[in-house]
Length: 221
Image (cartoon, rainbow, N blue to C red; front, side):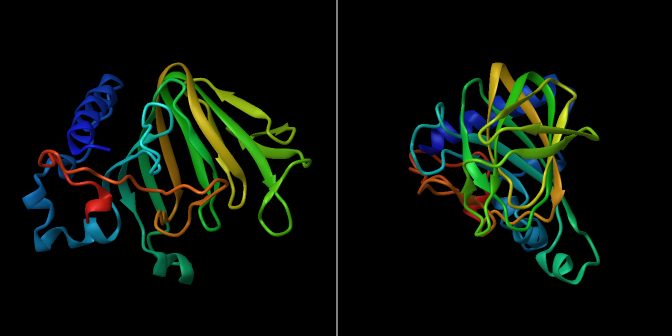
């Protein structure tokens, strides 16, 4: 992705988020120089901030995701079972824009449709070694009510609805009808090692620095 494209996506995404009455924290608007200052070390270490990804494929409109991590605990706390054990993100998936099939080994997450179009989630259960089970049905809680679908089945979430995904559950998602604002509440988030994709793709984008960044991405840290 070109840095100029990333800058535009950030500006458009911030405006989209504000349409739903959601305001990002102050550090979202810090300059790259401010973000590199010593006092922001915790923000950088926890991976907070802007995250624009095309999964290394160079086709953001077809396969990509806008994310902003607002808070995140430490893996050390998660391992000892005490401390800040949670994380939160705000995300945007564009209409028909795929977030590809993947699972997490550590993270449990609630995916919440915060507004816009329908959020469609495709699901597979893991088999004994963690790979996709092409035959097993999948049961997931949706706002406290269990829903079961066949392997590869889809759940469509209207604004206000959510699904809970436990570690190991394979999932892909996209928006239907209109762009979708998504909330994510989870256990500690580790995007460097806890994203296992079905296909051979990357988690972060390769950036062509055609202009200066308006804001740093998590991957820039």
